[in-house]
Every structure is written in C-alpha cells, then in structure tokens.
View 1 (cartoon, rainbow, N blue to C red):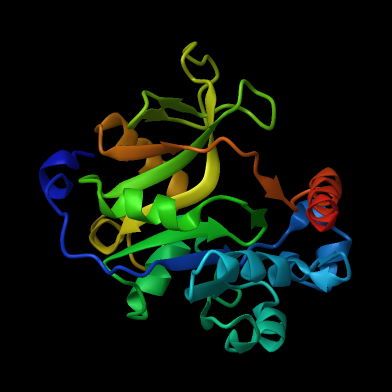
View 2 (view 1 turned 180 degrees about the vertical axis):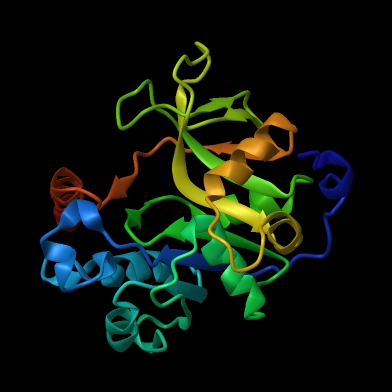
Length: 254
C-alpha cells in the first residue's frame, strides 16, 4: 500500500485541547473467569473498577474529552462512568455490541459516528500509562506525520520488542517478525496519535481491522512519528499486571 503521496502533506489546523479514544471493547479472555461477568475495564483494582483509576489519571493530566469505545458488556462501563462528571471530564460512548471490529475497526466506527477531532489520541482499556499526556499531544500537533507512536526501550523485558526507533520516527513496526533486526529494541507503549483523515482513508468501514497493520504500513513508508517514553507502562491484561499496577498505586500513596 503506497501512502506517502496521500498522507505526507495532510497537516491541518488541529485543536489545542486533546481528545482521547479508549479502546475498551475486548473480551478480556486472559482474565477469565473474572471477565466472564464483567468487562476488563471493570476489574477491581484497590476496591474500584480499573476504569476509575484510568479516568482519574487522564483528568489529572487535563484530558477532558474522552470517548469510550465499548463492546463486550459495555453497558456496565457506561452505567458506572456515566457522563464523566465525577472526574470533571466529558465522556461519550460508541458501543460495538457483539460485532467487534478489532482495534482499527473500532476507531473507524467512532469516526463514522462523527465524534473525532482532526487529530486525537488513542489508548487501550487495560492500560495505565503515567506519562505527560499534554507534552505528547503537543509533540503530535507539531509533527508533519499522520500518526505518532509512543515507544519504550524494551530489550524483550516486558513483552516482545516490535519497533525500531531512530530518535524521531518509528522506522519499522512489526509484531510478526520471527527474525528481528538488532535495532528492534523498542516496544509500543500503548498511546498513539492519529489524524482523522488517515483513519478515514486507510481503514475500511464496518470491517475487522487491526491497528497494528496500519502502524506497520506507516512505518515502512517513513510516515510514523515516534516519541520515546522513559517510564514503564502498566496493564491489567494478566494477574501479574494487576499486581504490578496495585503496587505502583500503593507507592503513590506513601
């Protein structure tokens, strides 16, 4: 797929305030049996659903415009979060129901509801990322590229490394490589920036689509900006991940 001609000059006037889409529609199969009756975003962490901690973090980083993309047992999330007033934010919903479209397809579905700004951020419903969101947002607004991936130096520590980063761009992103180049020392951190035009032109409507495939295509076309994160990420996709997050949150109270 040749994207360079259509995407390289698409920088347009972008809003000053960050908008973020949280992809929270997955089945959470790795956390069964917990997620047989609740979605992953509602998994209890220190006595409160995970989504409470995630929204609290975003609110503290002055992210006020949040779209929750839900699917599996999504009504439970909506019933708990409501309009976001308890966090001082605005939360809107796009519910895929049982027709899950994958990470890319879910963003396209949000687009089709007319809710996306010209540029916006994306994260996942099981990710707790203690980073400077506003700094990353401004970095994305200042780049000419249609997408930005946050990366962390990994050396296979947290999961399989999947990205090559040259200090400004992700020069290769590939989750499927069996033999990796020695410079593939980074991992996708879980927070990205996107232009609405890219989602509209490169992700088909009402089809299942993995965002990783578009990340890969942009990287090989030299169109994927990168931003290195020094802090580690936290996630609740596993029992160990839950323990690590709870330990981190405890440390913040000391």
